[in-house]
Image (cartoon, rainbow, N blue to C red; front, side, top):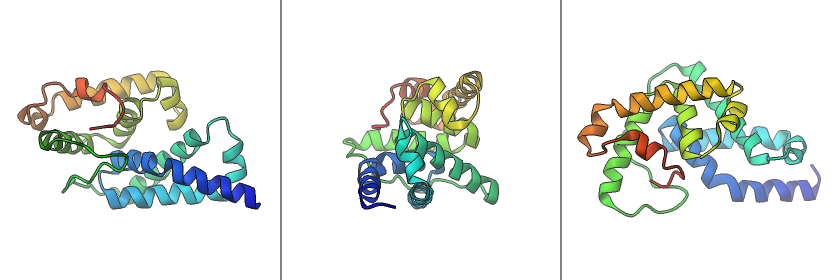
Length: 181
C-alpha cells in the first residue's frame, strides 16, 4: 500500500471507529466482542483498501463487512449470549441514570432478537439507514428489510422487560434514530 493510501486508511479508522464499534455493540451485545468484530472488519478493509477507498461510500462498504463478519461469527458459535452490563456510549456521553435503565432494558431486549432482525433494527433505526441502504448492506431485498423490521419492532414492543422499565413503546425509541441513548 502506498503512503497516501495508508494515511487515508488511518484517517478513515480514526473517523469511523466510534460509529463502527457502536454498531458492532448493538449487533453483538458485548463491548469486547464489538471491538474484536470492528478490528476484524477493519483488517479486512485494510487488505482491500484500494477497492474500499474507491467505492462511493467507504463507510457503507466497511459497515457491510462488519455485518458479514458478525454473521460469520454467529454461524460459527451458535451460542446464546446475554448482556451483563451496560457499556459506555462509545460515541459520546449519555446523561441520565433513568436513561441508563431504559438503555439496559432495550439492549437486553435487542439481544433477544434473531441476528437478522437485530441487524435490520440496528441498521435501520439506530444507524438511521434507509430501507434500500439496509438491503444493500445485508444483501437482501427492501421487502425483506421491511418485514424483518416490522417483526423485530413487534417483538420489542411485546417485551415485558420494556414495559416494566417504563418504556411504553419500543417503536417510539427505536424509530427516534441516532443511537444516542
